[in-house]
Image (cartoon, rainbow, N blue to C red; front, top):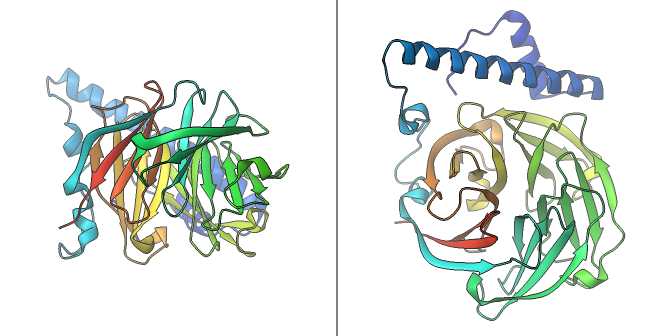
Amino acid sequence: MKKSWQVTPFELRFINKCDTPVTTKQEKSCHFFLSIRALRRATLTRLVFTILLLAGITPFSASSVYPQQGLQSANDPANKHFLNVSYGGQYLEITSDTDNPLATCWNSDGTLFFITGRYSNNVAMYALTKPWEINSAEFVMAVEIPGKNQHGLYIRDDGQKMWVFDRTSIWTFTLDSPWDLSTMSKGVNTDYSHFVIRGHDIDFKPDGTILFIDDRDAEAIFEVTLSTPWEVSSGMLTYTLDINDQQEELRGIEFLYDGKIMMLLDTKRNEVLQYNLQTPWKISTATFFGTFNISNETQQGRGLSFSADESKMYVTGRDEKRVFQYELKTE
């Protein structure tokens, strides 16, 4: 991605080290460096906008500030993902089941739906009479989750493992009976605060060998390699994708098209951002493609998920206490 500042030799050495840190000490150094670099760019941006205003020049529109970059072949259906997104008026009301509803997750056939509640410290479960149709969901139960600031949620396809992310650490739970929250284990916590500043959501590569974490304050996506599949305690940070040029307040991450597309929810922008990956599941090959605006439905998008066939998108509206359903089509 293009940068609007000059990188010093000292910074270049740091950037190279942050791509593949080896030790905890290096990860902490990278964590500090990313924060300083983000502050530096934010200050520069404010200075430029102030100069423009004093000169009587209107600052750039959102479309010019966030140009589409690195577009791939137009023949790739992934590149048309956001050209055919529509909201059909379907939503789920969740006013009494969770407080401050956030991340969402589904079972493989779309008959069960799950959502985290930050203030209620729980995960709520719903059953759908019509698979993937959010307005057919009915509340089943909720379970309390240890810790605080629960946000991210991931349940493995077999329904036997669940992970809840609380900004800087991950809780791992085993479900003795698949998809049944009442059989949930006590939970084990894994701390990632040595490089995560303020994360909100997580996603896994389907074979459990890579964990992805979004981080609003670091303005980055972290790629964490798990030496033991699905064991987050075995993770090591292997790549950091700088998305400062696009993100403002990240709060959701999902991979589509077998790892060829990464979708990010940005609350402040009121948009979902799409990145295309040249090499599936390798965020080092990601390029920014475009966005889809959700401001007509919510000004506080806090959760993002998709149907198994990737034809539907679901966004949690915190203030509305609703989960909105969108239709996605490719030509």
